[in-house]
Image (cartoon, rainbow, N blue to C red):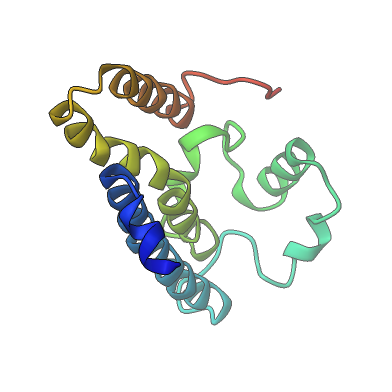
Length: 148
């Protein structure tokens, strides 16, 4: 039964799955390392670990407002990619792993484009290109849907 599923698997599916697997392990490994650096205080955090639980019951906007008022003292709230300005803090360093894991789909799609072009599969190529553009715009913050 296992061999049968391999025979019927498209080349693009294998490429996608291989990248997804490697990226998942990379993201997971990065998450373990950065979380360890944060939890053990090796890299100091912007919000003290002992204070984090006080904010768990708040919605995102209230949380951002409170941590800015209490700890960050920035001119503007951290929204979108502005968290990168605090990448040197242990609690924000963890976001790198989240970005890796969230961005995997874009890289998987990009990787299958050459195979689709080689097969002259115009419809799927266009769908994948449009998907990459939409995901890229959404990740950049240019395309924001459903937010406040």
